[in-house]
Structure formats: structure tokens, C-alpha cells
Image 1: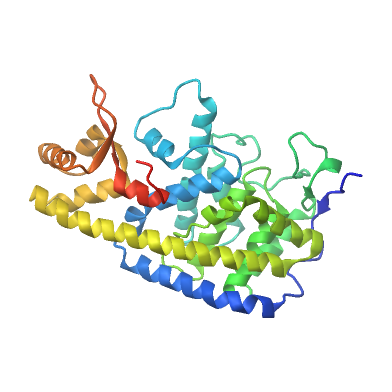
Image 2: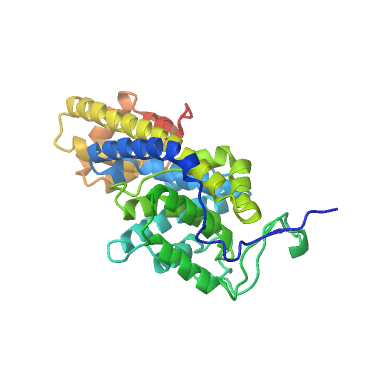
Length: 374
């Protein structure tokens, strides 16, 4: 006999019982790993520039959990003007979803300058996330007013794996969720685990809930000043354990197993904080090494501007460097030639006719990918 769908845990939030004895051994390591990562962030000059490839990678992996297939390389190549073949419409759509994720994240951060982390911030992030992509007709920025359910494509509600809260009860449930963001809690990281699971359980929007719920993680850490920059990337861990991730979330509503979910989430935070810390260190070391190298090679007062351009746009058209790096054109051309001659780039597309060469700053991209890709 087919299993009945799991339904939302009515009256189960906030959880009344958490087994703190099972969580305490994980809280210390997670907090310590986050603190070490934050210390590295503090040492990174202009983290939004230097760590921008990591933000793109997070957008790629969070979107991949939902089924997109675009890689970080394809996203950056698209931004640099290497458009996929017209027959690859799905690939282009995937890329736009990734780009929207990044835009939505930065819009939410901008709003946090004037607002607390709240429903208004999440709705605005959702509006941008859905702008001009698949799902744009599914009420961007507005909570759903109809039932939805999770299961195989085309399944009925009776065949679903999970059925979120009804649309009539959703507004009050989201108000409870928002109040819990600002409630006093025994531990902030456990509070974040609970908030992420509850957001996914409520499934407040018709589309984009998974990505938005994962975006909430760095926004919360930033809002409580656990991190000085909203640059925390959790999706690599979750994408690699997608089935376990979904099962642990489902167990909250099915079995009231908040403790099991919180253990999984704390382990995810710990592991990703360690990986983020190492990548940020590697990027900072690369920046310092290349700064010394480029200053010596170019003997130019514009060497740092050139380097910052490469970190912000590690895949770029040569013409864009000349026109947009805020360096005088003749000097920009000279610096670019010097860097090319000294092997900083991989040529993705050679110059041809009026088309400018497309270059990739391969060392930075390989650090962001965590493997040799370029």
C-alpha cells in the first residue's frame, strides 16, 4: 500500500522538546569553526570583491539542489559574453536562475542596512529570485494562496511525499517564524537550524523555497553578527548529501525529530565553516602573492586596480578590462599584455575579428571550485 504523505507539523513550532545533551557536543565545534572563518573574513580586504567567486559557487550549488545543471564556469563565461548555443535554452535558463540568486542575496543584504531580518526582506529576495526566470508566473514576492505539495512531477496531493501548511494558515505561521528569529534562544546556531527547517516545512512560496531557505543561513549569521560579512556557503555540504538533507527535514514533520535535524545542521555548519575558512585563506594568500607579483611585473600605480578587477570578474573579455577597470586605456592594455605573457590566464576564446578575447583567471577559479577545472 502506498505511503500517505507527511503533513506539516501543526502546533509543532517552536519545538517544545530538544535533546540538548545530544546537541551540546556539536555546538562548540560549530561555533569555533565559524569564529575561525570569521577571523579570516576580517583579514580579507574588501571581502565582497575577493570572495565574489565563492558567492557565485554558492548560487550554483544551491540552485543545483533544485535541479539546475549550470556550472560556475558556465555562469561566469555567460557574464563575460560567451553565450550558450541557441539550442541550449535550458542551460541559459539555469544560468539566469543562478544570477538571480546572487542578485537576491545582495538585495537582502542591502535591506538589512535599514531593516531587521524579517518577512519583508525574504519577500523582496524572493521577488528578485523569480524575476524573469522559470517560476516568474508563480507570484514573485508573495506568499502562496493555494495548496502546494512535494513529490514526483505531476503527482496528486494524495501521492505527494510532503504537504506543507494550508495557505489559510500560512500568514500566521510566517508571523510565528518571524517572531522566532528575534526570540531569546539557548543557542543561536540551534535557533538557525530550527528556523531553516521551519521555513522549508512551511514552503511559503509557490517556487524557490529551497534556495531562499538556504540563503537565509548567511543572512541570519550576518544579522546576529556571528559573521561580519554575509558570506557563508552551506550548499556544497547539502548538495553532496541531498537525500539525507531532505530526509532529515522530512523527519521533523513526520517524527517530530527536531534534535536529529539540528545535529545534521550543526555538522553541516562545522564542515562548511572549515571548508569556507580554507578557501578564504587560499584566496587571501593568492591575492597577496599576485599583488606582489603584478606590482613587480607592471611597475604601475594601477596594479591593485587591475588585480581587484580580476578577483571581481575572474572570467572577462579583454575589452571589458580595458574599458571598465578604471585604468587609462593604454596602461590597461599594457598591464593586460604583461599579465597574459606571464601566464595568469587561460584563453577561453581567442580574439577574432571584432570579438575580444575571453580570459579566465584560472588559479582563483580553481580555488573556488575546489578542484582543477581551468
